[in-house]
Image (cartoon, rainbow over all chains, first blue to last red; front, side):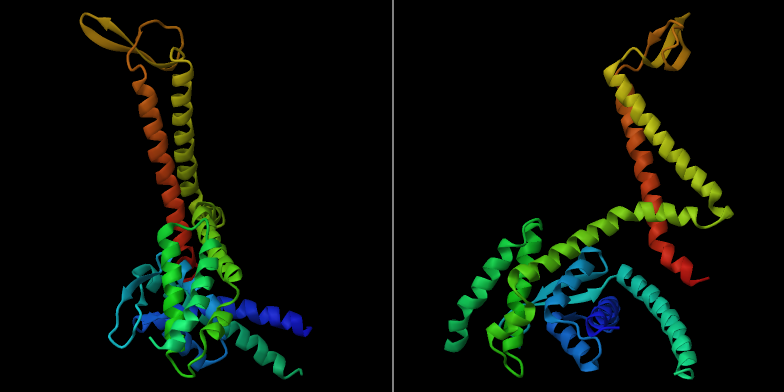
Length: 118
Length: 196
């Protein structure tokens, strides 16, 4: 696989995982965009860009999976938009987590078998 | 706000202005929200370690027309997902095996009813005498002669254009009911698959 193919492949994997990661983080409590980005970057591996997270949040909100509200925090000079999961979002998170676990366990068993043949 | 921060604002304002001009197609509320959140994001980032410049934060977001395109693309994908769920529900029903056949037949029946009612409504508007409910007065009582397409059995057509209104209402209700059922089925699709 060329480095360009690898880049596209990584982008595809990250795009799918980003939605699950955002839902999982919001499941732990309300967050605004920069907080979510910092949490994701602190974990590493996902590499969700600043230009991608807000369109993703916007879409999830339109689909009714999350709900946003503007808050004027005392420690900030600007309003922040906090997001939280809706009931639909929690349901989607549960479904995506189950699917992710199935996928991960399948891949782990395939890759585990292949390690011995390398 | 510091003087340095104030001097950077034109850059942010011009970015927001270009961004706004590329968000056509989204609602006014949504555009306002996107612009507010972009402004909030920039303010948040420049106030946090390692205190980047506004220009650097905007560069991270990407060129305004490219950034706008992501919102528009997600908007289209969101609408397509919504519009396609009924079809996905139907595909799901077809692929579920023999036990889903009765449900599939019910769905087909309801859609057929919806289309037939719509057709009756249209025919009634175009050619009022060709479809209706014919009755005859016998000893002061109204007896039904024929309902449906005009079979030439005489009598008086009793419903008139009310039939078109009733037919369109039935078409709408049954059509929406069947579509809502298929969409619901599509939404629960993933859950059913996982439990297998």
